[in-house]
Image (cartoon, rainbow, N blue to C red; front, side):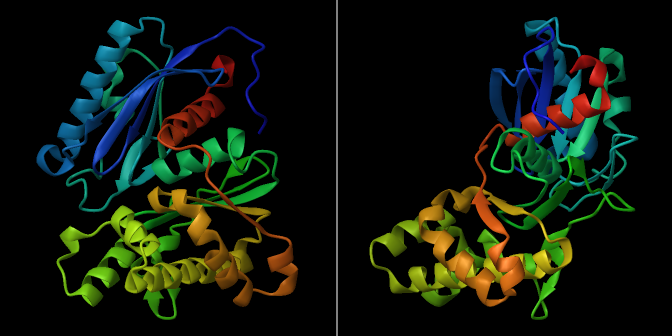
Length: 307
């Protein structure tokens, strides 16, 4: 997969990134130019899957009015996606009733081609094409947030697996506990709140890092434990996938200045020299637009005539 080049006509596409709490939406060109980017609450618990699909429909209709020359709709979304059918085939209760929603059918009246990809896969594609994994042969991309998501790309090909659920790494048991239950940001918040004997709602990743920088020994110790666990999980995944690079994304990964030494220490101590010396850990370069851009990468792979 090569980076898109400015050789053909500039084309515009609606790009939507659906998360559990927010929808990022806008218009991006085939030359990677973001013409518009906005955000709105998902309200998934209130709307449910069908209501959410209707909200996406309304956003697309609004964007078509603002950008009448758009030539397609590229969607990145939480949940497991059948990318051939553009249908959600598995989802958590973060979006009730999401299973069975088919975006190609929901948006059919807009008369534009529609393609849908999982949000972590989309973020991974954006990193592979124009971000921290650009120019590599193989990359494992992990997003560390409320849970842990992952995708694996080799020679430009994204691995989907038999049921479109390849690289659901958050569920992999590490020392008998799911990887995300001990190494996601939510695990850090939970452990700090418990040790402080305070409600979890009073803590978040940003506050924990701020407290650690101000000398809070509990927060610093828990950050170190979390980072080493992430490194251990990466080592386990590298034994299976053997990627050239591992790219880490998600909110707290912006603090790579603090996390990198401990993650690398956890990785090296749980790996073998051959893998440890030949696997580079990098941090994601695309931030808020990653899902939107990756959705467009996926769309253009499906419609090369529009690239």
